[in-house]
Amino acid sequence: MSYRPEFEAALRLLAQASEAMVARGLPRPVLVGGAAAEFYSTSGVTTGDFDLCTPRQAELEEELQGLGFVKPVGPGMATRGWIHPDLALGFEVVAAVPMGGTIDHARIRLVQPIGETALFRVISVEDLIADRMGQYASGTARDRIDQARLLLALHPDADFDYLEKRIREESAGDYGLDAIKD
Picture 1 (cartoon, rainbow, N blue to C red):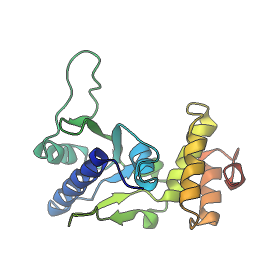
Picture 2 (picture 1 turned 120 degrees about the vertical axis):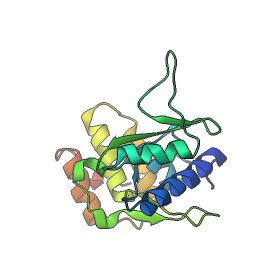
Picture 3 (picture 1 turned 30 degrees about the horizontal axis):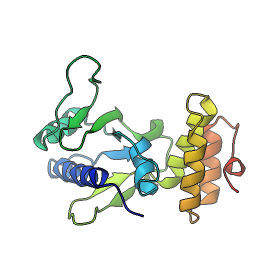
Picture 4 (picture 1 turned 60 degrees about the horizontal axis):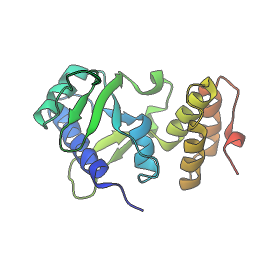
């Protein structure tokens, strides 16, 4: 299985923006949400946008503009994020820190895309699965349990103790690992 080409190209752009932030003495953004799910599922789950967390939104947006991203304008266009015209994928800062700061930051992965020297950060698969379960538990995204199950199946080496704890936290105690394990 491999990534779809536009997603792989977007990962390379994320890595370039990330390196530019480091060159400015700023922290790398962290990839979360649907794009993190696509990353961990090797495009088994697909997304149209990259959700990012950074306490330095203005600076990251400057770097995105330098890489060719533009703000969409016109009727029916989302205006919170940035779109790369060649990829039709948006990048949006959704928070200063991932999941309200509830994650173990030591678990955030540093990743190097194939063919790149630049690096980017992505939330851990355990925290991503917990996020999917939190959305499922909220009733706003009932399909997220399927994503959680797929991610767990693809990552049987996940830290089950940490995952159990995080799913319980994100679902307000309503669910645990047993809800997604076969």
